[in-house]
Image 1 (cartoon, rainbow, N blue to C red):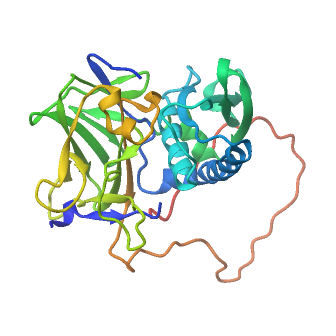
Image 2 (cartoon, rainbow, N blue to C red):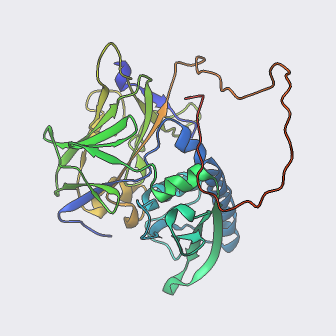
Image 3 (tube, helix red, strand yellow):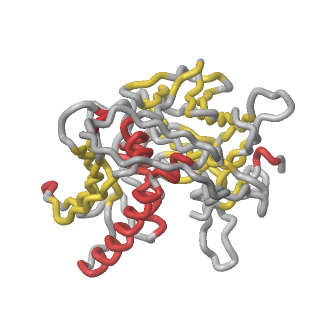
Length: 348
C-alpha cells in the first residue's frame, strides 16, 4: 500500500434534488485551530457523558443527534456544520445511543457577548445545546462558553475557507470534488463551501497538501467517518476509526495529492464502495442512525503527522542570562484596546 494511501489510527428524512453538498466550514489545519477549540471539545465531551447518564436515568432508549444549528447571520462564515460534527464525535465517543427517530433531539444555538456591535468587539460566544422533546419543548439546556481569542476568531470566520479554481483551501490544505474525473465548480455561499451534485452522482474527494509536512486527514460524510463500515476490528471486537495520509510537498513538487473515492469496508478485492448521492433512507448516514440534519456535508480535518516517535517537541520561553533593565512607574489613564499583535515563534 502506497504511503499516501495509508490509513492512520486516530486517538479518537429528506431528498435533495439536485443536491447541494457543503464542505463543513470548520476545516481544521496544522493543529493550531484544533488546539484553539480543545476546551470547547472537552466541554462537549463532558456534556455527552452527562447526557448518556441522564437518558439512562429517564429510561430513554436514544436521542436524535443535532438536527439544526442557529447561527449568527453577521459572522463571516457558518460554524454550525463544524460544531455539529464536533458534538456528534463526542456523543459517539461517550456511546450515547443515537437514533434516526426518537422522542428527544438536540438543537444548537450560537449567542454572542456583547449582543450588538462590530464582530471584532465580540468577547465571548455561547454554544447553547438544547434537548428538545415533543412540540419542540426544551427539557434540558447546557451553555458552553467560548472565550479564547483564537477560538473566537475561528467562529467569527477570520480563518475562512478560500477558493482557487475548483479547490477549497484553508492555509496550505485543500480539497476539490470530482465527478467522472472532472472537478465540480467551487463556490462560497454565506461563507460556506458548496458544490452541486445530482442524484446518483458518484464523486471523489481530492485532498491537497501544499505544506512540506505529511498530513493526516479525517474524512467525514454526512457526519460519519469514511471508515464507519470497516470490518477490520480490534482484537477485542471493537471498531476503530482511522485517518488517511497525504504526502507533503517534496523535491520541487507543488503539492501532495490523494484521491478518496469511497467508503472502506476491508482490504481485500472490491473492499470499498464509491460515494454516491442518494435518498436519505438509502444513505450511509441513515444506516448509522444519523439525523437528516447531518446530510449534505463533507468534513475534512487536517493535522500534521510524523513517523511514530519523531514528532518535534513543543517549545516555550524560559529564563536566560541575568541582566539589568530598570523601569520607572508612572500613572496614566488607559483607553480602549486599539490593536493586538501575536507573533508566533514555533510553527509546530
